[in-house]
Image 1: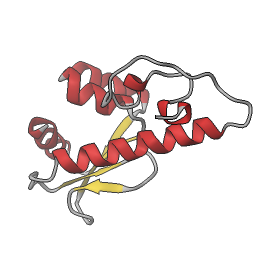
Image 2: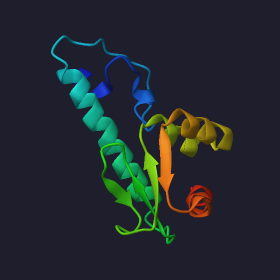
Image 3: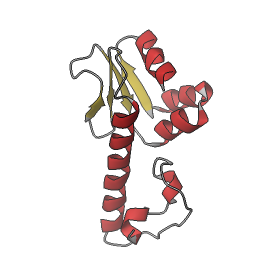
Image 4: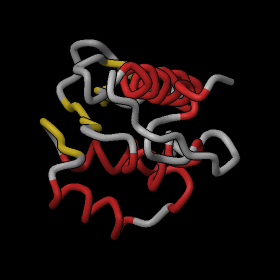
Length: 125
């Protein structure tokens, strides 16, 4: 794994928490390492959600911070929006609704449609 793939100014663990290790990489003046780390974080989040939600039959879709819908029906009436990667990690590994509520208040997650359907999605995870 190249230093650019490990992330910029954050640990591998911070890149969604899907990998192990705690190596950090310093920020380069070109910013290319940051862009590569962001793409890797996005790809890991996409693949993880698609894998975890492949059997979810609810009427909720999940949208990532780049606007891409990665799970659920494309025209779902309820959409769960992940605006950053950290809340995803907290939902999967922390199982703490307080942290999810804090992420909502901070604007890191959001939803459109029925809050009740969002809880169906969270219960599934």
